[in-house]
Image (cartoon, rainbow, N blue to C red):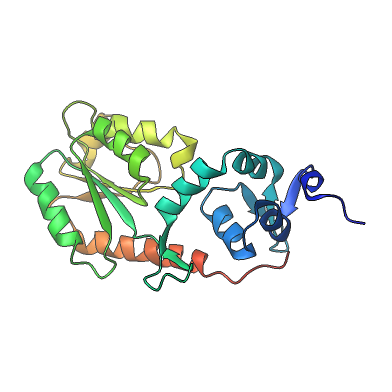
Amino acid sequence: MSPPKQNRIQKIFCTTREAADLLGVSIRTAQLWSENGLLAAWKTAGGHRRITRDSIEHLLGRPDNAVARWVAHSMRASPGGTGMAAPAAFRILIVEDDASLRRLYQAKLSRWPTKPEVVVASNGSEALDQIKLHEPDLLVADLQMPGMDGFHMLNTIRAAPEHSDMAVVVVSGLDPEEISRRGDVPAGIPILPKPIPFDRLASITAELVARRQAAATEPPTST
């Protein structure tokens, strides 16, 4: 006889099927929640997903708040009202102190085929607040800004584990020598020169969108 559901969670980790059963959701929903960080998970060498008991317990302990936040960020109900869901729009945060350039970003990005949702901030401090509120998929940042500049902002972001998966691109009018003199930016962040290279940014966005779509449509793995 199989143990009661409430006892099965005492395992250190669960398969996707077990996690879905414990949470009362479909296997595909459990997969999406693990892919988007609501559940802590990894894959074995054989490609099987394993979900930590702690993250399941955490979610079961406060399902209303945790699930609502994830659904608001990652899912949108389909027009037919069938209960199916579609990925949320790709969200880009623009951090630029020049108001005219912020408007230019918004005008240009609104015409991209990827149709990203655009959020703006005028300095690093405001950007950190926007990140907490909107959890952007891509951050496009200037370096010279009043108050908290881009250097301080980027170091703060990269020091926060919860933002480790957020893509970041710098667009700056500073030359490489000046950027280096002022402390440089964290490793792995590309620096694009002004005037704003919208074609390059569009290519980066398209690649990130394609990766997210591929992850969302990944065939269910064996559990």
